[in-house]
Length: 292
Image (cartoon, rainbow, N blue to C red; front, side):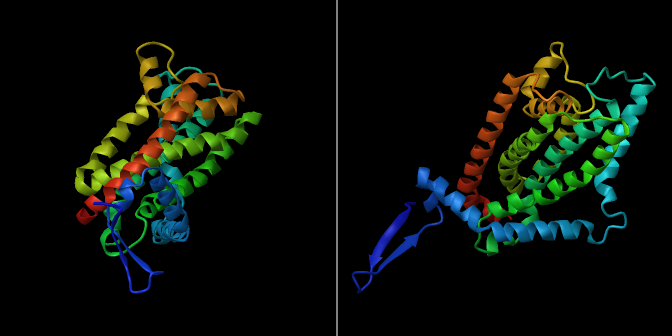
């Protein structure tokens, strides 16, 4: 279909009726990006309302409330700290005390995993919103980031408490950590754009993602220092999240990046995944919305 099927002039020469087709914006080239950005910006009010709704629904009828955001990380880190202290599972030296190191690492991992899972399920959970209402569908995916980011903010409370308990004073580089976390979120969002469409067509996608994330946590230096021996070093380098997580740990402990080359590559890859995923979503959603 063409971007303009027909331009029908009415009786007045100054009035032109333009008929837009559903797939019209797909062939705009660079103008398509401007349309995507403009439509998403205009949907900021809807995105904010959806974020507030998701957070409210998540905690409104929960007996333990915000405790559910921090209990999994505390239990997991507690188990690994015990195994490390008892030498059942020797983990090795970390730049800061292990409890602080592990709590921060698992918080960043849960931010990524939570954002990716929420984005993947966003369209399927949207149901009739996807087909019966006219709005920018990206709003559903972007709004799904709200509660994982909110949960991450809650998880910072025990992280800060443990840092204080062990006397960990972050270096000045901690001010750059939010920029690295932004790349983590953009990586999850870009992948989420693609997986949300896949999950709309094949509902097994979300279940498969859960299994992959369960394995992925142990392939990422969340609860152990980054490996330095092959082939484990190669796995760490190929994992796009690993350099980002390691960068946050370096900035907190040292104030500088120990592997700036891998961080730059991972950052560029995250931006590429975000832009590619967003464009893929924009081009594909008109064709698959009927599966909602």
